[in-house]
Image (cartoon, rainbow, N blue to C red; front, side):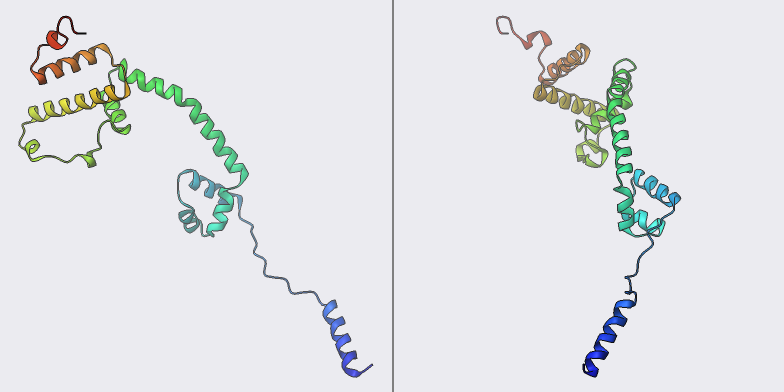
Length: 188
């Protein structure tokens, strides 16, 4: 054998005996306290970027912790409990509105479901600015009544008797017709 071949074989044997250089491994060890803080921040609604910045770790790390099956199962149990409470919450709101006549809850409910506009959506007309407080209150009451009447007509919602009577009286006052003439005899 030639000298070059012998050197090549010796070099190959040396290379096979040496340990390969391993890629740099990152130590993914994160303390359990940090994992709990990350989960808590996620449950509080912070974004992955905010959590990563606050906890001084990578977004992928935060994402891996947040997407862990244990946390997802916990979130699912919480969602199920909340959905289970929805009927009770609706009963409490109904009681507050109907029995206790809580105006604030009634107003917020109407605003949240889109019947009433939010304050940022209201554009005051010049005529409204010149109104007295009583005229403005009367105008707002009529506006609310017209929205309720329209929603009742569109969605076929049945209203309590006293509310229906008040709407009928308001409509009669606007059209200048007495309530009794609304349905003349023989026309039903």
